[in-house]
Length: 97
Image 1 (tube, rainbow, N blue to C red):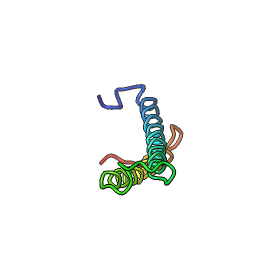
Image 2 (image 1 turned 90 degrees about the horizontal axis):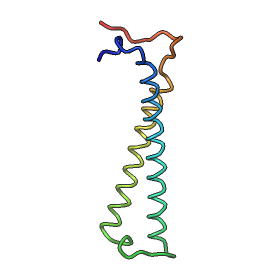
Image 3 (image 1 turned 135 degrees about the vertical axis):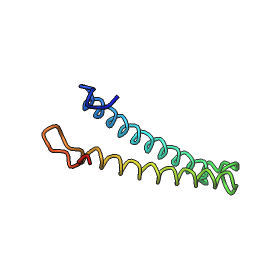
Image 4 (image 1 turned 90 degrees about the vertical axis):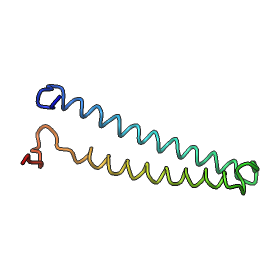
């Protein structure tokens, strides 16, 4: 359905944008907790042999680092779009050609 035919379109967009923003924050927090847990597993105190000095442990660390980097980038992009979105009182800079 085209948004012009949906009187609740602006509210639906706001709701979905807030959900996206919150989900990305939750993902970043979860990945940060996972990285902290992995750091504990590979610490001298715990020293989990399945994660220390193995390809699987290194891959886990690498995937967590990459996932955090990608998730943070997605958050920055989406958050900028959400924060820079015109309000109902502001004109839209987009023109239809």
